Image 1 (cartoon, helix red, strand yellow):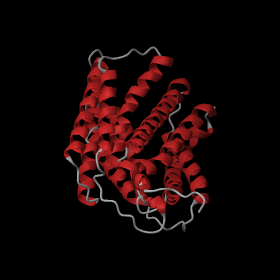
Image 2 (tube, one colour):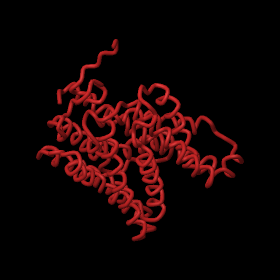
Image 3 (tube, one colour):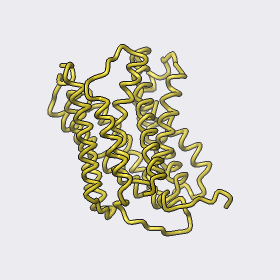
Image 4 (spheres, one colour):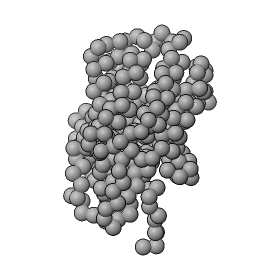
Length: 314
């Protein structure tokens, strides 16, 4: 990939990591300040926004992508991730969630015919070393990180990481076969239906009694909407493995939020871990794409970004 595109890819990856930080910070604020925990409703708002914006912009028929199963899979991953952190220690949850990176690489090799070079593998290993330093920094002086350990929680966390990998590889395949507006419009449509049923069943009575803080909820929805909107572009540029590696830095950005607004302190090795992750994703993006490029069809949006020159006047 050209250096200019590498800078763009790394920048987009970190922007997505910031979006993850925004959603987690907003959810924490809802709980800490207002004792509100409504994950189904929060995600429903995002799916409705996706459906309104991208179904309107889509040039394809609404039934052109088989997305309901993937929308449901993506949401269940989020549910399992929440259950994992409640059912096991923070240390176990972070360690086991790192399984998504090698899992994505294995699935991409088998289903997307990816061929990873030595640089790709080494970059992924360096990224995991950075994650290990983040975990170590979190647990050196914090006994809470190793409490609440449960084998059931470990199994839930491993299942969540595996489903995330399946969902991400599936999404990478879909966005390379369809336009972003088509994919996101379909995901928003089916996600609104599936998440709407769950929100009504589990959270309706709680929602109607809430004294809303619209600014916090809007922050969550906008961050998640921006993340969903940018993900197809990153998939086309560098793939799901790169995205999973990039999101590890969200731990560092969460720490920055804590330093600015809470009484958090900088754990040891965090800056080194952050640098390792950035170096690894940069090296990964500089290497040739592991997935063969297939420039089929006339729609340029279906091609990988770095192999495309857009003509916005057409």
